[in-house]
Amino acid sequence: MILFLLGILHVSSALDNGLARTPPMGWLNWERYRCNTDCKNDPANCISADLFLEMAKLMKYEGYADVGYEYVNIDDCWMERQRGPDGKLVPNPELFPEGIAALADAIHSMGLKIGIYEDYGTKTCGGFPGTKDHIEDDVNLFASWGIDSLKLDGCYCNTSEFSTGYPAVGAALNATGRPILYSCEWPLYRYHDTDKIPYGEIAKTCNLWRNTEDVQDSWDSVDRIVQWFGDNHGDLASYAGPGNWNDPDMLIIGDYGLSFEQSETQMAMWAMMAAPLYMSNDLRTLRQWQKDILMNQEVIAVDQDPMGKQGLRVFQDPKKKYEYWSRELADGTYAVVMYRRDTSGLPRSYTATFKQLKIDAKSAHVRDLFRHMDLGVYTDQITATLPPSGSCKMFKVTPIKAEF
Image 1 (cartoon, rainbow, N blue to C red):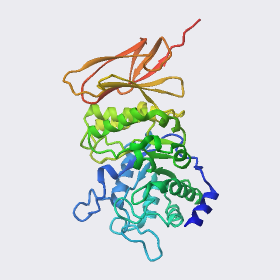
Image 2 (image 1 turned 180 degrees about the vertical axis):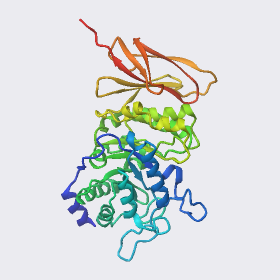
Image 3 (image 1 turned 45 degrees about the horizontal axis):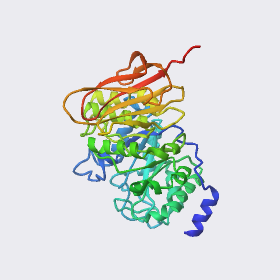
Image 4 (image 1 turned 90 degrees about the vertical axis):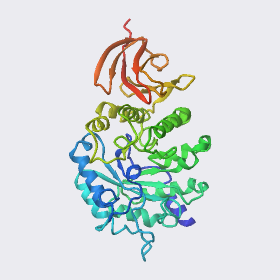
């Protein structure tokens, strides 16, 4: 094992795949479908090839692919509990009767890409075979299947091994010769000790990395993640940019836990954070307003801004009832979110000054990105009315240059 690690690291010790120049977009089954392998009693919701193909078709034919969603990602529990006699991973034949390669071919035929899950430890989080001691064989198998993305978890492993293990897998992926997006869970297992996480190493190794707790199907979960990023953005933002992204986890718009306003806020905040946009929902049952939020091209354009500069929380009131975020964009404009967290009754008016928003201008054109409306020229500040319980307004602000 040691000789293998040394050899593969000699081939390529840093990320070198040319991928994720903007945050990746797609669909991932985990939050919505978890480890549901009971296709006998729940065929519509088990994590079978049929489910992934159905989601891929909806992505293609209902317009998601047209606005940038392209990866169809398989999470944990896709494989058998034991490796085959040849030591290779074996897809569960009840879930994937024709194998993963056939599924990959079908997804590729729709112009989409396919991702798969593994774990650096001895087991995955669900107790299936991990990749430790099998790195080269596993990544070569994934490449032979036509896999386009690998999510690598960190269960059943000592975190002290991450600094060698994750780079070894990344180097092995590069050595296959196939461009494979690399999503790491490296920082996730140490998110309570943010200052001790080697983000410089991680950014050299991974295209994206999960920073904090798993998102759950509730507004409280989404807000906790937003607050974690607001409290810890410090150096985090400096590591984000083309090819490298902080990952606050999946979009749960269209599941059970978010209102209309909260759905807009999750979409807005993920765009502000230059986050990967991986939906985890049932695309078969989404309401039109949920589709409209997920396919809002003006908000997606903020997320996909080519400069890749992560937005920051620039103001929070002392009682943490509301806050403002600002993100500089490649064309010299700014994306701004005014976000209300408190739950007290009635709508309230809030004012964000350009100084608070880090916008060096006296006046600016302001556009509402969810209502798709130009609001006119604002001077020194923006005022907006927000209802309680997780609502926001998202604006694009175009400074007006002073003429002399």
